Length: 203
Ligand SMILES: C[S@@+](CC[C@H](N)C(=O)[O-])C[C@H]1O[C@@H](n2cnc3c(N)ncnc32)[C@H](O)[C@@H]1O
Image 1 (cartoon, rainbow, N blue to C red):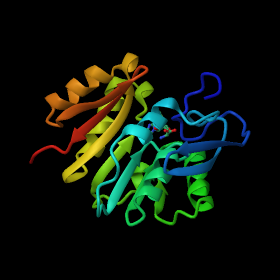
Image 2: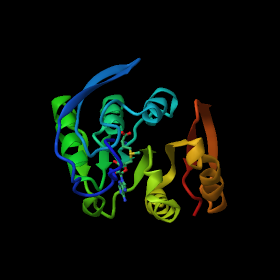
Image 3: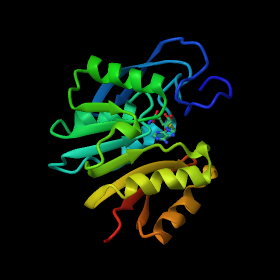
Image 4: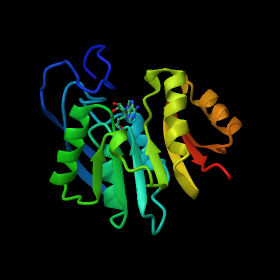
């Protein structure tokens, strides 16, 4: 992110300066367009990379997957490659990020990515899996609202996979989730990042 401007505004005020970053994983390589005003425009974020390297893979036969807070799309595009039979919803509030994600999916030939604002995602869709490097910096209350909204759209038996920096409150977030019925396990921990696996609430 360039300067202090918040990357979660719908229309970033910083001027555009398109760039290209590479996402290299053991099973795929993607070239992704980025720009100023979106999260981690200079390189794929280390936390995101950790989630994609060591986080859960999409379940066999999954129909609907969600990348919550997709940015320019490293997670959504990876899910789409790894689970070609799934529809991958890529959701963000930042319009510049949404445009980049849409272009990146198209450039990679990934016809199974649907890029949308949260409001335009149909209410009746439920997710077999959610992946997110969530926008912790929006503040605790907003983050809790955001996660509550989307975790309640997990299908029965579904799970969410989050990467959160330890110094930004990963452990207290895990406790908060568990206390509210989303059983949360720490899957891995490395260089200040935690991967959290969150199970759908029992109804
Ligand atoms: C930490 S960034 C991760 C971006 C991308 N997934 C990545 O790994 O590079 C979090 C993203 O959440 C988005 N965001 C913030 N508030 C949101 C909301 N209410 N609904 C959906 N996305 C939101 C931000 O715009 C930002 O792109």
